[in-house]
Image (cartoon, rainbow, N blue to C red; front, side, top):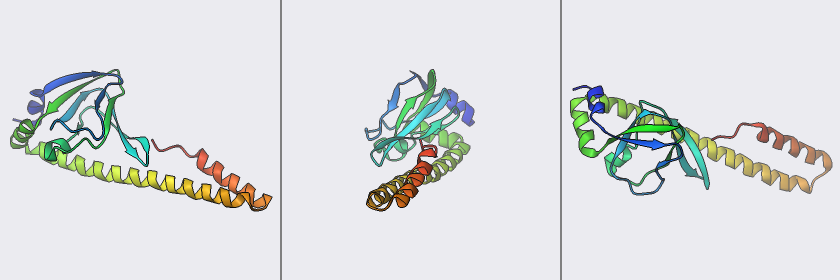
Length: 168
């Protein structure tokens, strides 16, 4: 049996816009998911902020850490399209899909590694932006006690950072 046949056998759930599939930090139910229709966004708390990490589009698997080690959810997932149709993959279904379709395991492993790199890069960028912001604030404090020309240089620096698009 191929991957398409395995996916066709999954139990389905339908969610509406704004519904939370799961929240970061809550115990997992040991299930991962496959998105058939709709769009979901992944949010994670980083440096005290609720940060959008990426979107999940139709054809993607997610939540695999719950299958592997039943760990708490590492992020929150919310429906952003009008609705979403998801297939539920529990541990026994996962094992069966892996046996019936080795292609499934390869695709899943490949995507997990890609997401790990993407997430790591995004977290580093967010932390760097926060660190840069702290450096600017520190410079502003120092410049307030300096002369007027030095103060103007600080303002130009602020404009540079404010004009950059925020990292979601």
